[in-house]
Figure (tube, rainbow, N blue to C red):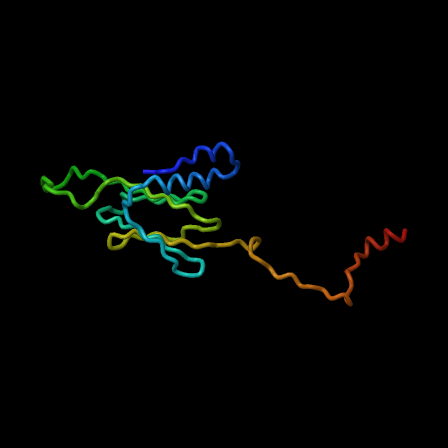
Length: 157
């Protein structure tokens, strides 16, 4: 239950739509199913682990689009089961879920694996060479500025 209203801010600000939508999502009290961990495994490497016990590999999907990672799980009804048993108490959740993660720029999904009821999604931040900082050499005053030969000849003419 949210105790504050962001509507006045939507009317008086420009360009903060993403910030306010993130605040709305955080305050919605979204359910904690399924639980997950986010780990840093290296300087530019991360791992999201989602507890998906009871889900088979074909019941899970991972979609990376732009800066959003979506993990969905949809239980397939098993109507061909050999045992026609009646569940007296269901403590193991088997409901459909969707988890959405906002990824930073240049973060890409490298691998996904399902082991022991945990879905592991490995992420790496790959900054392109054009965006990396580079060192600029500083010329001393004795060397002077380089002269372009073509422009000196045009100036003399």
